[in-house]
Image 1 (cartoon, rainbow, N blue to C red):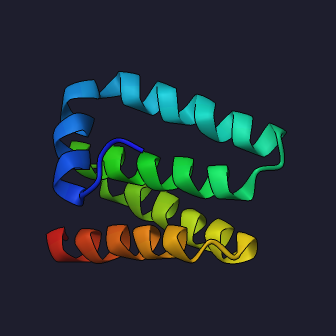
Image 2 (cartoon, rainbow, N blue to C red; image 1 turned 90 degrees about the vertical axis):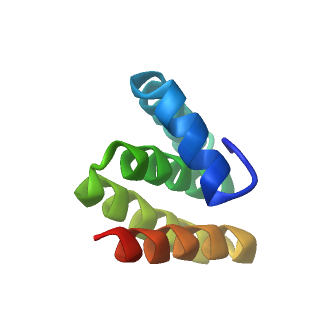
Image 3 (cartoon, helix red, strand yellow; image 1 turned 45 degrees about the vertical axis):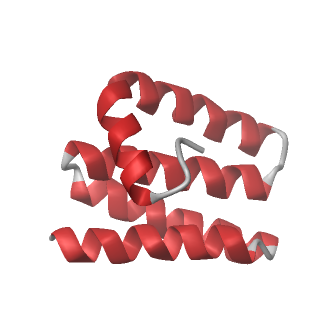
Amino acid sequence: MLGRTPTDRYKHSRFLGADALTLYGKALHAARRLNDPVGEGRALTDLGWVHQARGDHGPAGEHFEQALAACRAAGDRRGEARAREGLADLAHHI
């Protein structure tokens, strides 16, 4: 995860830019390959934050929604909360 708060994630996401998309894309691929739904949810949430920071609201929302579904399926309530936080932040900025 990039940071502890949405603000931290925004700061780091802006700094990392395309590198962050590559990094979290690889994390997502690895989590899916290893059948790790918690890791998948985290990677999807982080991808959502990176897209959000770049102003790419469509992909951000898609990643947050996918993260929410993955976290629900895994029973990861903390992950669900992070995904919902992303969706709420996105709704605030649209």
